[in-house]
Amino acid sequence: MGTAALALAPGLASAATQAPADHSLAAGTRFYVPPPAQGSVQQILQLVKSGQLKNAGLIAAMESVPSAVWLDGETAAQAAEPGNQGSAQADADVARQVRLTLAAARLENAVPIFVAYNIPGRDCSQYSAGGAPTDADYDAWINAIGGALGNAKAVVLEEPDSLADLPGYCGAAYAAEFPDITNTTRVGDVAYAVSTLEADPNISLYLDAGNSAWQNVGGMAETLTAADVQQSQGFFLNVSNYQYNANSDYFGTWVSECIAYATVNEAQTRADALADVATFSGTSTPGGAFSSPGSSTSVPGGCANQYWNGGAPGTNIANQVGAYTGVALSPYGVWSETTTTADLNTSGIDASYASSLAGTVPSTHFVVDTSRNGVGPDSMQSYAAAPYDQPSSVTSSLASGNWCNPPSAGLGLKPTAGTGVSLSSLDSYLPSNPPLLDAYLWVKTPGQSDGQCDAAGGVRSWDDAADTPSIAGWPGSSSAAFQTFDPLWSVQTDSVFTDPAAGGWFSQQALTLAQNASPALLP
View 1 (tube, one colour):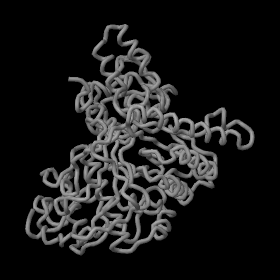
View 2: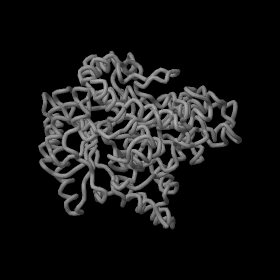
View 3: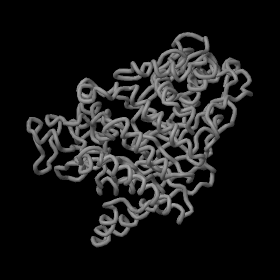
View 4: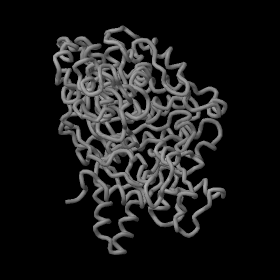
C-alpha cells in the first residue's frame, strides 16, 4: 500500500453502533439439519437400485448439511376460501411449521434458519410469484411467526428479493396488475417484520440485499436503511445465486460502510432514504450521501460501488491504470485489493470508504448463501466454442439468465458462523474489528429448481443456424415448443428437456451440484 493511499485513512478509533443489541452468531453455532427435501430420498433409492452408489452417497451427503426452512403463505386451495378463512388458516399453518421446526432443532441442539417468503406481489410475478393478498394479511402472517418463535434462538431471513427487486423495478405490466403494491408498501411490509420479529431477543434477523452482481452499493444501502435495517441484525446476500464468496464479502462490507457513512457522518435519516426509494424505477438511483462519489475527484464522500473501481494515487488500481481510472468489477472472477486484473481489483473502492468514513466504523452485519456458489457464476462463454458456436448475442442472453438453473454450478462452503472474515481481511485500510460477516449459510435448498428456465421467461436463447444439436425432437427456433424448453439442460441430458417448476425437485441438477461441490462433499 503506497504512502498516498495510507494518507487517505485517518485514525479509525471510534465506532458507530447503529443496531440494537448485537445478535451475532457464536463462531461454534450448530445449525439445524431439516428433513430431506421432497424428491431427494426417491432419487437416492433410484441411484442405489441402478448401482450408482457413489452418486447416491453424494445426494445423501448433501441432504445431511444444515439448510434453511422456507416459510410460505396461502396455498392455492386456501386462497380460494371465502372471506379471510384462507389467510387465517395460512397463519395457523406457518405457526405450526415454526413450532415443529423449533422442537426438531432442540433435539439436534441446533439453531434453525427460517426464510420468510410471503411478501405481497413477490418475485415481480415471475417464477416464484405469489405472496400474501394484502399488507394486512402479511402483517398477520408475520405476527403468527413471531408468536410461534417466542424467545427461541433462530436465524430469520426476511423475504429474498423483496428489497433488491422492488415493485418499481418490475415494469408496467406488474404495476397495472398490482397498483396498490409500491416501493413504499414493500418497504413498509419489511419494516413491520423488523419491528415484530426483533422483539425476540434471541432472533438474528437479516433483510434482503440481493447479490454483488445486481443493485449498486448505494442503492442497496439506501433501500435497506429505508426498511429499518439498523434495527435488525443486518442483511443477507446471494440467496439462490452463485456469486463468489469473496465478492459477496466485499459487497456486504461496502453496503455496511455506505450505511455508516450516510447515516452517521452525513446524518441521512430513514425518512430521507424512504423518500428516495419511493421513486426508484427500473433500477436503484440512490440520492444524497448514498450516491456514488465523482469519478475524477480526490474529495472524499459518497458511496463507491462495484460498477466503477477507480482509486486515488497510491492505491493498487491507480498504480496499474492511473489515478481515478476505473472500470466495472466483473462477477466472473474473485475480487481482491491486490490482483493485477483491473476489473477484479477492489483497492480503489476500499480506499474510498476508508477516506469517507473518517473514523466511523460500520456496524451493520450480513450473512451469505453459499449453497450453490462453489464454482461461481457461469459466464456462458463455453457455448461460444465448438461444437455450439453460439454468437455473442446468445451467450450474452444466456449470461443474463445465469441465475436460473445453470448446468455448471456446484455446492459451496458448508454453513458456519466461524468465517474468519474481518474488516481488515477485506479492506486493509480499516481496523480488524468488528467482524461484519456473521455466517455462511445454505439458504436455497440445493436440488430445488429455480423455475422453468426457457426463452419464454427471457433466460434462455439458442441460434439453430450456428448449431442444431443432434438430439431427437430438438424444436426449431420458429416453433412454439422452442419457447418452453431449456436448451442448456437439453444439451446436458441429451434430450429435449423442460425444467421443473420453481421449488420442484430437479434430480439432474441436484446430482450435478453434488458432483461439482467445492469443497468436495465426500473424501
